[in-house]
Length: 206
Image (cartoon, rainbow, N blue to C red; front, side):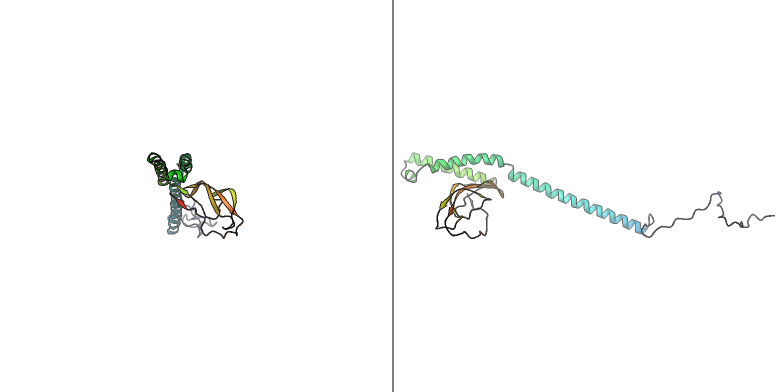
C-alpha cells in the first residue's frame, strides 16, 4: 500500500489544507519599500512636506501680488481724476501769471484781497493733491531728462551747460513714483556739454 504521508516522487508542491497551491511572497526591490514600512512612511512624509512647502510658497506669492495690487489701486486709482484737476490748477496759475508784478504791488485793497484769494485757492488745491500722492515738480536748472520733461524749444545760452532746463512753460506732476504729466520746458543750447546727472529724480515743489 502507498503511504499517504510520503512525499510524492514528482517534486510537486504540497497543497494546503484548503487544497489551494501555496504562492510564494513576491520579491520587493529595495527602492520600492514595502507598504507600511519605515522607508515607505518616510517617503510619504517627505512628499507631503514638499507639497506643503510648495503650497505655502504659492500662498505667499499670492499674498504679495494681492498686496501690491491693493497698494497700486490706492496710489494710482485717482490718476484720471487727478489729471482732470490739473486743468484747474493750470487755470489758477495762468490767472496769477497774467497779473503783472507792478500791478500787484500797486493794487488797491480789494484787488489785493482777490489776488490773495486766488493764491490761497491754488495752494489749497496743490496741498490736497499732495495729500493724495500727487506732487508738483519744477525742473528749472536741472539736466534735461525725457523721462520727466518734454522739450518745447531750445534757448541759445552759452552761460549754462547744453541740455539744461532754463525755462519751465508748464510744471510737471508725479503720482506716486510715476509721471502724471511731464513738465514742458525750454532747453539750453550752445554751452558746454552737461555732465551726467547724479540723480534724475525731479525736485518736488508744493
